[in-house]
Image (cartoon, rainbow, N blue to C red; front, side, top):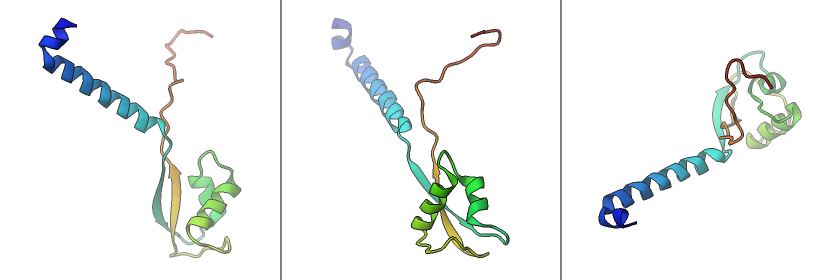
Length: 105
């Protein structure tokens, strides 16, 4: 403890390092939804877009969310429409493990 008390810059460095690491872990552990816009192309439908952009949600849940975000009363869209598409950021997961070649389970 005397080492840290004498060398305040070490205490400051370790404190800031710990704060930075914890903030990165906390930020990355939260699932945040990000929205971006797409322009509907000829032949696109909400069902085709759901297959292309949906995450872990069901197709119907994804379509309902897109309809709600874009204030759509029907599922019919036309070429040239601009839609806001929700997408989930990747979630930081503490339970990931590394499997080495030759490891058997």
